[in-house]
Image (cartoon, rainbow, N blue to C red):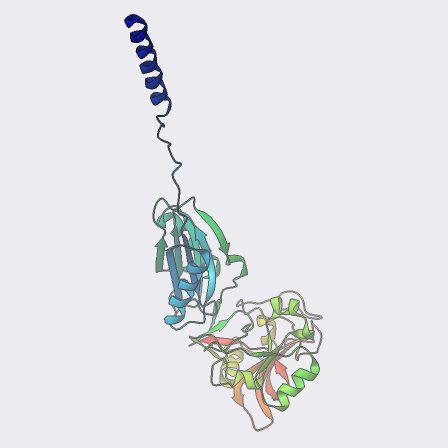
Length: 340
């Protein structure tokens, strides 16, 4: 009996021990979680002088908001041009203001990689002038795989200047929809709206034949009230050409009967394409809001002739004559500007 009882006790003991071992839980190894961080770059697209950036933001919206706020604080009218996430850097390059306006940006695993892209992008818009101004921002390590979310490079057409004599001219027509302080300029979408703006002496712009597709190539047509507005139509660091500026340009080129040919684009004119000797690229974009393409290029000056007329210049398709004359202030013209 004692032997039987002892055996029974041993069996119970073994069962209890086995049960205890079975209940031991092995530690669970949790997969490491990565907290993705975001960065962004904002600039004033009209001049590139004002910028703001952010890094290590918890969300894309936070990164963009911080970048815009920093850029606006510097004095710009800013928008996002680059957003990225993960471990890496963004870089921004610009050229000096006395040379012109050109800028570029990029992302990379290191700031050096990002900078190489930024320089390459800037050189596309600076006529080969090396950009000395450099800023950069990096997300911390361990914040996810580097990924570009948004890049506005394809949307940017940098302001280039062409030197003709002692003047530095823009190589394209003005194409802005806000004044320097960020106030919007009214877009007239019908002839009725355009005429009403003129009657009310209200700043306005219009696309040739009211077609935005024309704006991508030719820029915007402005009324004189936009040109003369004290809020500033030209980008900061630039000014709209005066009558004397246009007169000087014609004199620098030479004979006014042939001068236009040296400024006109090489293609697109109904008659007598130009040679575009200086890169001025005067396009045959019409001489008012409603005239067809191919016949003339016509520009305002910032010089008033009298209550009803404003000075400007016209380059004609029918010949290469360069004419500084007056236009009715109720008309619409393109705008060229110079580096201060």
